[in-house]
Image (cartoon, rainbow, N blue to C red; front, side, top):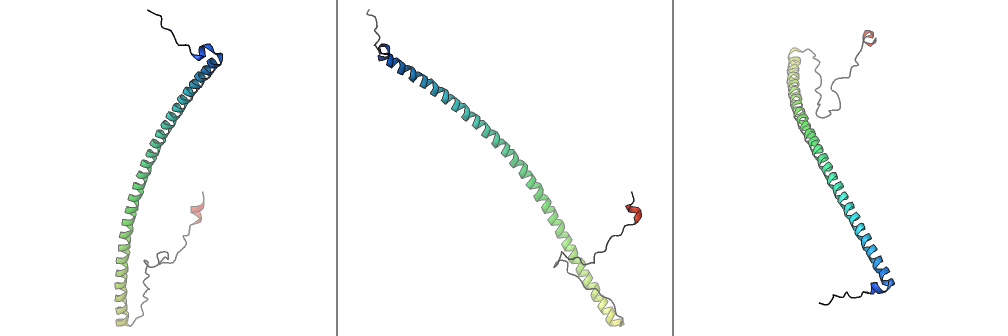
Length: 144
């Protein structure tokens, strides 16, 4: 059998070509290393994004819970306010009824009865129907 002859490459015979092959090989290794670093960097970014998504989902859950609690409290307060409004309307109607009785008594008896005007708290809720009276404290309370 005849020995297998290797074809003579240009790099084997000419030093210029061997230098070019060496440059190609170095560039290929550098490219591989750069690609590896790029993959590592992208993997790190992906992990960071996954962690950020998890943290944001946790925050969304907490905020949703707070919103639910606040909404429930709002509903409870609104219901309480509705009850108070209904009671105020009922008491106002009772006061009107009592004032009409006082008008009848005044007409029948001839005595002047001081009948207060009925304030409408629902029309001007920021105005108190009663005058504000200061709270007095004794000197004993203020001493330490």
